[in-house]
Length: 88
Image (cartoon, rainbow, N blue to C red; front, side):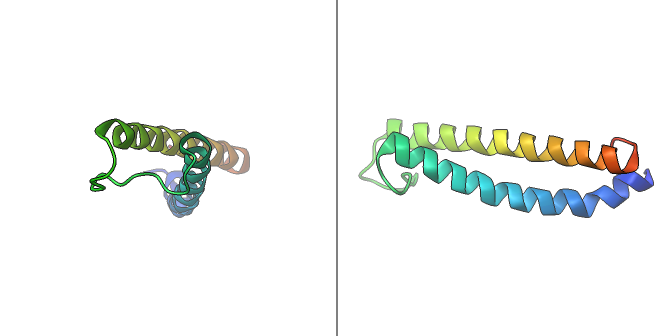
């Protein structure tokens, strides 16, 4: 395993944790605007329809995937600029 890849691991973990927090905040804001509510429905909420629960889950997954890709790609690009090699 390359030294640059090993050195990038802790940075990648920190970026992942930060990305998760950012994705959660982004999803809450999107849901407020689309759902006109503060909280998205939970899968076990018996007063919510299947449609509403599945739409919320799909939207949350999409937001998390986009934020993760953005964070991962930006971190790798920054690592390349610093070390001269791509970390992955």
